Image (tube, rainbow, N blue to C red; front, side):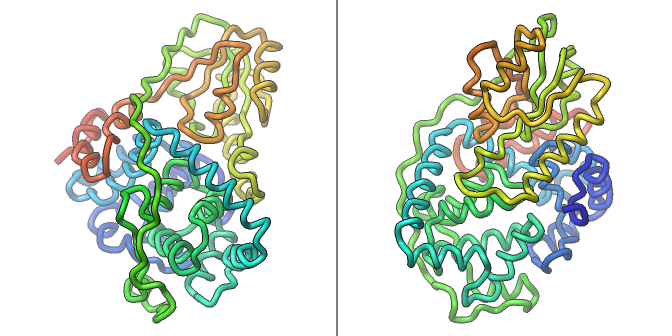
Length: 401
């Protein structure tokens, strides 16, 4: 963790500064190549910081488009917006996250009752299959908390269509080990590979593609299922309205909750927030019914410590690692608060805990970036990306040509 992804905003800014010169044509030409652990200089590797908003999308876009035009950095800018798109899509269809959790529970029951499935699942998680590339990716994930995006797609396809393991268990394996794992991007990407997100269209890993983009490190000839059918899945639930967030009244006695979806609270202070006290939320117990990798817990905890240290003059006394709505309510009351403020948490573990707060009003402002972008995630990414120039243009001073 400390070598590849130091858990500080300073490290995130340094990584961004080092990547910016490569965000144009270099990125477009090289981004699909997976050169192995510690060799991912052709991509930004900013995702663990963006996922926790220790670094924000706006900051990244400002840095890149301060050097390149939108057309020159189009591929990278689109990758930044993929995460935004997935979040918006799931915000308008939160039942999909609930469906994944139910599917995971069913799959875990099967693992516990079917010895053959359990041994196959354990072998896949250990990287102990007959497929060398898959084994290497499984071990890289567990050891580093990161995988190149192309490797994630190949891995998921092999898990689902060659090893024939439940996709829900694969998504859970990623979510428990990735530093950048979040419910929207992870769940919906696995659904896309399986063929249940864009229904009837799956992603198939091919030996030739793996060989090309690993530059010959792997060539799983005759080991992969060649033309699998997409999995069946239920139709998408009806689309809800995109959230707009709550209005903050900073005149009321207030406490602040910081969670792992937004560890950059300066924008709340710009709205006039002056909290009596602050607490951090530890929602890792809600990530999975299985064990979450200790390094993921440690990474999140360290990022929260970095955040509270940086903002110590603005947040009051800090209480660390509250885990339940009841703990939050008791702490807020003891602090003399009339309301609890938290940056809007998208669908996932933090949101689930915050949604259970009843004893005091909870106010959840939404960043302008999300409020502008999420409503456009109504269909596929192709439709969404047509809005990117407009969304970029809403960020003051950025180039859109």
